[in-house]
Length: 184
Image 1 (cartoon, rainbow, N blue to C red):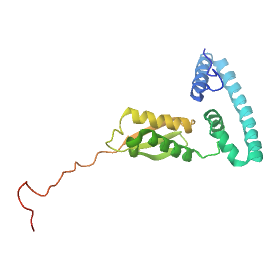
Image 2: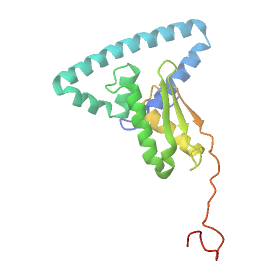
Image 3: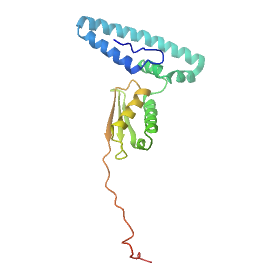
Image 4: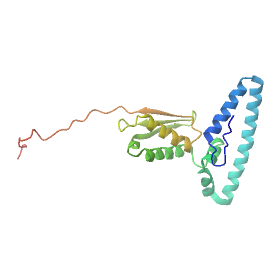
C-alpha cells in the first residue's frame, strides 16, 4: 500500500481518510481483528484529539486567536482540527467561504450558486444552482464540491438542486419597420 504521507507538502487529508477507510475495510474481513482495530483507532483518536486540544490552547495563550486561525489556514492542520471539532471557524461559516471561493473560480458561471443549508447531523451541504448559465454542468458541481472539501473536510456530501427555468421572455418591439409609433 502506498503511504498518503509522501512528503511534508504532499500529504493529502482526503488520501489519508481513504487509506484509513481501506485499512478498516480490510480489518472488517475478520470480526475479531475489526473490533480490535476499531478500538485502537478510537483510543488513538482520543489521544491525538486531546493533544491537539492542548496545542490549540497553548497557541491561543501564546499568540491569540489570530495564531489559531493562521494554523487552521493550512489544509492539513485544518482537517485535523475539524476532525477533532477544534477548528476555530464554525462549519457553516467555512462552508459559506467555500461557496464564495467556488463562485470566484467559476467567474460568470458562479452567480447561480446558493447555499440552502448545512445539515450538521448528516454532514451534508445543500446547494441550489440557478437555471441557465451552465450552472447545472458537472464542472460547476465539481468546483463547488472541491471548494467545500478544501475548507470543510468533515463534510460527507454536497447535494445539489437546480432551479426550474422561468418562462421564456419575449422581446417586444415598437412596431414593424416603417410604421410611425403612436403619438409621433
